[in-house]
Image (cartoon, rainbow, N blue to C red; front, top):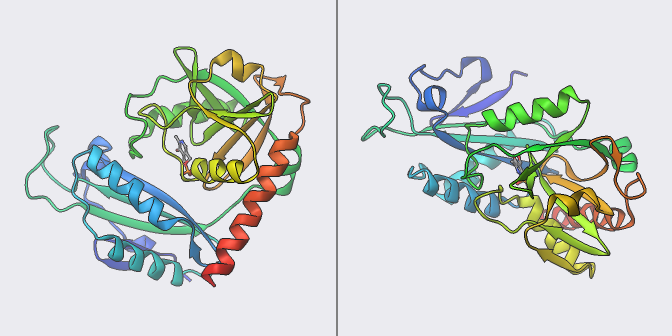
Length: 286
Ligand SMILES: Cc1ncc(COP(=O)(O)O)c(C=O)c1O
């Protein structure tokens, strides 16, 4: 079965999907995207993803080409055209095709693209034994809250982690934690959960919100505030979160053990709460 994608109003086989070379997504990285996990054929936190999409579009002054009801219908349609129960939906909106000029074109239709891949969540070994991370200076732009397709900074940083055999790179700007190249970051110190608040320096992760809700439900005290590099390096636990990683414990940071060097006790609490929460949401949707 050939993979079916959605492009500008039509479902078609992936190999038939074509974008003109003057698309501003190609020329300028002028567009935004979302990645939505699908569990048991149910898109997880879809309304929240659509709110974030609207925020990204507003930030780049691009009109939303579809209503939330249209997005929802198309996403369910795309899911139904793929065999797996667990999928990862990627959607992208660009400012469309126009003569190359930095300033925005007038009266140009947005390009809308969506595809589905099998959802690959972390293997048990990564959950049980944790992951390695390195650190770097966060040299990305000052609109990291926008889920922009211009991901060169993130790609360069993520490759530095891959080169070091690490899963992620934890980023510091002016001596304070921001996030990682494709994840949010949480720290446990003295039984408290610390993370930077949502602002222009981090992507407002959908998983970040879920983790905060679960921490509150599990009675873990939370402080959303600037977290210094020193606090991260002396943390009892560090977690990275994203739609595909879910929650993972960082056991070495720049080759130095984090806490005991094993996934910590609060990680285990939140990880199992996350799995239980997913099951509950899926049961409710079934
Ligand atoms: C830079 C960055 N931060 C955080 C996240 C986590 O966001 P979410 O939990 O919505 O996947 C991502 C996800 O891709 C990301 O790219």
